[in-house]
Each structure stands twice: as structure tokens, then as C-alpha cells.
Image 1 (tube, rainbow, N blue to C red):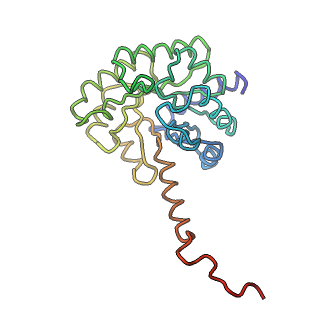
Image 2: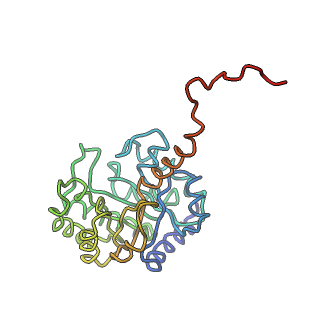
Image 3: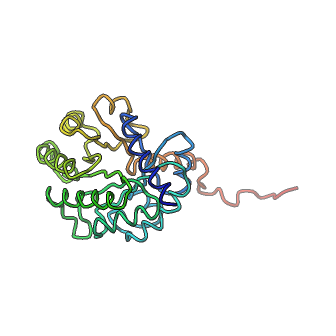
Length: 266
């Protein structure tokens, strides 16, 4: 994809976040799912690390190298005419400028970055460390001349035994990410907790991203709670898995069904 088109798509992604509250970004994993979501009318998409890994027989949590991820997402981005953001996990050990350069090179115009460092035993970055990484991404995008949308994710709620116990720390982290230049923030694993969602959406001035299940959740509820951005994580792929199993169920061979015909044809 040429540079001018990439810049235009990045600008469009920023505009869409202002137009839609919340902006729903279906989480896709290959060219087929991307084309299907775009054809359904969605104006932007995101590639999820978990469904992408599953579709390629790899493990989530940086079971692929950065180069492998870029090779996988390039044809996805090329398959559609809408902006595409990419979940880049914890950054695959890359410097911020290298992460942004690789993303832009394949036409990506947004990224998701989390604070669980899988390449270092799953440790969680400190608030300042994660904010500094996000600041590096912001500076790299600015230097490259592409307004890449940075979605700063925290896994504090995910790792906590009781999510409410880390609310104050999570809010401090989300605010630090906002100040570091994140365009939106993503506190995962609180999509079913109205109180926590309302607390975090009220604590920052930028859009808060929530995970959603395309069948089990309600868009209006997220809007009411102030959520500004919705992605599906692995839940769209899992919903399709359930649907596929249901469709295939009646066709599964049963015991004794093979070779049941004894007369052949005619």
C-alpha cells in the first residue's frame, strides 16, 4: 500500500472514533473475515492476535514473531478498502520506532499494545514503563508522518483475583497512558461489570475500549456506560466456531453409518 493511502486511512480511523460512540471494530483474522466484515458495512476493522494465531496454528501471547505477524496481516489489510488496526500484543521485544515502521509498511493504521510482556515470562510493565513505551509509539508515528491510532491496553484487571481491588491502580495507569499520547485505552476483562466500566470511562477523556461478544452482549448497554470503542477479541471467532459446530453436527458420521448401503446404484 502506498504511503498516501496509509495516511488517508489513518486520518479516517481517527475521524471514525469521533463520529461513532462507540465505534465497533470487528476483530478479524484473515482476508475472508475482513472482507465479510467490511461487506457487512463496518467502516474499520482490527486484527486480533488470538484469532490470528489460531487461524495459523500458532499460540497467542507472542507465539509468532513480529515478522510473521506482519506477513500475515499484509494480505488482510490489502483485501479491504477500510482502515485496519492490528493487535501487536506487548510489542514482540521491538523498539517503538521499529514496531511503528513495520506496521506502517504493511498498511496498518492503528495498533493495540498491552502491558503483559510475554517474552519476559508474562511480567506486567509498571505504569511508568508502559506509559513510556506508548509515548515512544506516539513519537515514532508522529515522526513517520502517519497518525497511527494507539490503543493502550492494561491487563491489571485480568491478572487480579478481584478486579475491583485494582481499580485505583488501573485508573492511574489509564490516565498515564492518556498523558503519554494514547488515543484510546483498553482495560480488558471488565466487559461484564457495569460499575467498573462506568468508573474507567468516567476517569479519562479519551475513548475506552471494551471487549464484546457479538451475540451475548448488547451495543446499547456499552453506549449507556460511556464506552467509546468496541472490539471482539477472540469472541467473534469463538461465536463462529460454535455456529459451525452446530451446522456440522447433523453431518457427523454416526456409528455404523459407513457402508450402510448394500445395493449400490441401479
